[in-house]
Length: 88
Image 1: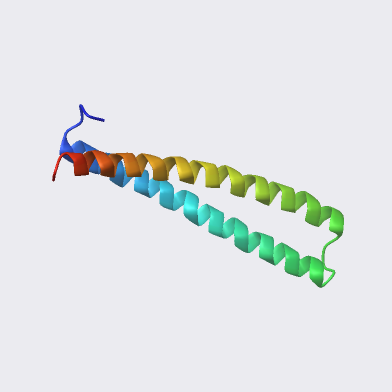
Image 2 (image 1 turned 120 degrees about the horizontal axis):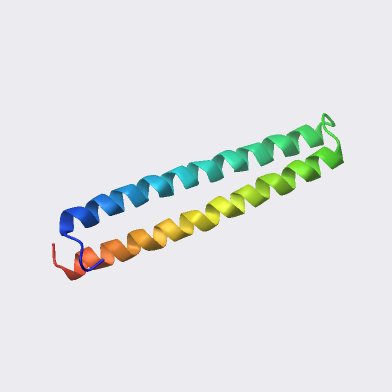
């Protein structure tokens, strides 16, 4: 990142922030889906088998997006550190 100009670093940080936000909202949607699924199970509207299958899918997707989100967060922190070392 040292070879990038300041404007390029800021653009890169902006793009990484957009990706981070997309993964954050995907995680929130998956959490809501898990809550809705649990509510349906509580009222007996779905079977435990369907619940288990969907729950594993939702949790798997959540963990995937969480991992990607952390990757983008680390990259944003690196960019911020680089910009701060340049004394902008």
